[in-house]
Length: 314
Image (cartoon, rainbow, N blue to C red; front, side, top):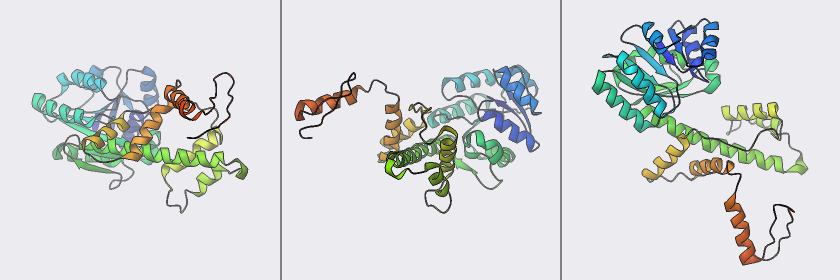
């Protein structure tokens, strides 16, 4: 199939390359000329501008967006709108909020008769070789039309991808997927922190992360990545700042849980831990220490001396 890939970053370039390898004709576009040059060096077609990209695509055109969620998606859609016609297809493979995807699908269909497909994509930089997990939302006909693309990008034609339901459902499922991912990562992080702290056992956490990948009920790809990180950066991860960002999907998941009255304490706590990791002021911890001193007479560690002698209750 002939389609334009807009956004050639961490996954967009990999998607274009994987499609090219399987005989499709992707044309890549990115504002960064270096990304276009790297893609072209692998034999994949590129375009230096949006107009050039449009000229290289057959009508009705298919565009696959791999750009940051939010207003950038709306900006790209506005730029594409003059080039869309009835039965054109726009696939949003980014981490867009599912309600935004529902709105965009409705607007495109009503204004130009084009289809908007929300496709949650997981696989990261490893997807080029191992395949991507694809959670697809949208109308039946355009999803079926794109089946050859999904079958190429997935780990196998009948594995790792599926049509979730109507517009918004693909990004909704991907949102929950990322919320679960937060919880799993938090559990591994806490467990390995406990083992690292047990200094008298001098545990080899690289070895442990490896053996747990074979036969253990907690084996997973994330555990393989734990081993990679510990091997590459050292068991103490001393060169990595304890600052954990989030893409926003974990926040949306927690908000959805509240809206649906579904208790999700693990997912919520994992998000809070990420937010806490960025607070170098830690005012609340200082206030907690001050309160313990007020009611229980517990000694305070000062920022200068670091002295601490615990007495009293609480």
